[in-house]
Amino acid sequence: MSIGARCIRFIDFPGNRNLKLLALATFFLMFGFGAYSATYNNFIVQVLHLQPEQLGVVESLREVPGLIMVLVLAMTMRVAEPVVAAVSLFLVAAGISAYYAINSLATLYIFSFIWSLGLHSWMTVNPSMVMGLSEEGSKGRRLGQLAAVSSFGMICGMLLVLFLGGILGFRIIFLVGGVSSVAAMVFVSMISRDIGHAKKPRMVWKRKYSLYYLITFLEGCRKQVFLTFAVFALVRNYHTPVKIVALLMIINSLVNVLFSARVGRLIDRIGEKRVLFFCYAALIPVFLGYALVRQPFYLYILYVLDNLFFLGSIGLTTYLQKIALPEDLMPSLAMGVSMNHAAAVVVPLAGGYLWQNLGYPVTFMGGAVVVAVSAAAVLLMKTPKKPHHRSG
Image (cartoon, rainbow, N blue to C red; front, side):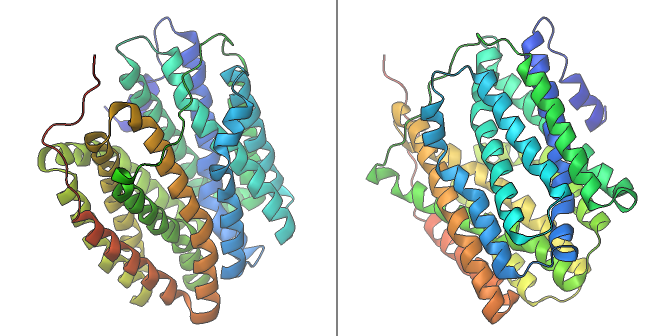
């Protein structure tokens, strides 16, 4: 059965109308976001003519919502989750649609922040809705099904850019992405308000989890260097067309679908320490290659390899699960998300400054240093033979 057929089948939740609506909302949101993502870098280079330092500011501002999500959640504790989700999707739709008319750096700052605030809110409330709408004993399966629908939506949006991007143009694609997000908002607004509320995780800081926090922060640094600057370098320095960018992103999405479960099984079999060390060690030549190689075809390969080795970061969650007390797991994961977003705010600014003043190879050499430190930190990992279990 094809990947598309499997993902379409996942929308079928017998007797669960609310979950079907959530799946449809997920598909249309990620369809629009996939189209946006495949177009964004070419737009900011070819139309807005952004400089690296300016890109760093845009990306840093865009990650600020991730740091303030705890405040947003506290403000919406008594609001029905479908209402919070609908408002979130409205912000995504408004922000992405506005790219149709963006013609200055100031408006790019404003509307990037708006859609990011909506998307971060959605990413926080969506898993809680899935859990609240799922039957007991099937919650993990439903999360997996919705993840598959999300990946399929992204791929479809990128396929739109691949085949019609040259005909529609950047601004029309952004408008399509916004309209698709409006459709997602409509489906979410039809979900029953009374679905229960999963307990919002508090955050906790404990010294015994400091290695997890450190590696998570470094992982956020590594990830942000590539997310912010890899495609930007391909477009700005090597004039990569939007169709090639879309194709690379489609390949990465397919890699995620095909290999994420396999990497997870490998972690179960040989342990987080070995998998994470291998992935970080392998990323050192990937970053150095991005800094030193000048042939676009090989840079395309390195871009895909970075995404493949990123799958090893699954091991950070399973590592924490093994060392944390059960009551600390969710709060510590929440703290990890905050550490990741702290990196996401700082790294674009630093990377853009380095690129602007010393050249883009220095930015990726800095990434190589980060993954080398990550590999060294992984060697300090120690896990108990059996993870902690909830007492009683």
